[in-house]
Length: 229
Image (cartoon, rainbow, N blue to C red):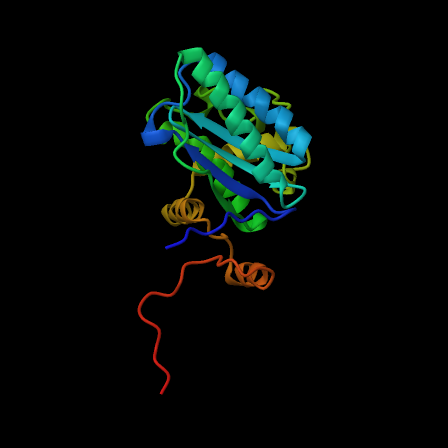
């Protein structure tokens, strides 16, 4: 079965996932994470992508970002991937691929799934047993939105601005959001959509997007199609 083309739609937030080949580590030193984030900032500015959130885990990373044009995300990910692989290979005296195939990507309905997706990213290090609280993990966007540090890479989406009228109120609300966590159904939907490239939102949102593209945006109905009589 031919794989679906990745969907990238200007003006809408996207959840992106890239894994290491055979789940091998892609970050072995803090300096490598720092280089990765520097390049991410450079290419995001170059190609017109607003990065809202990220988490860098030992063998994969997630991003939440909104492109200004349909081609911005593919251009960003291609440039970032190539630049980082060269850097990583040179640092470790290796050759060949680092990534497990192409990156995965899902379009999100902002008011329904953007904040749960961001919170889910922040909770990845705790679920992986790397830290006991998201605030202890330096390589995610949690610290920025929780008021612990300022990360110039990040551009807060409208949904974050709507959390409160002051920075203190927004930061407090965001911390509470992460403490509350993501429901099992939300996490399953976020994982399934990014792995398969589905659009994630309510039926009206998906139907509206589907009218603008011939690319399938949701899973096909199970079972054999009914025969005409």
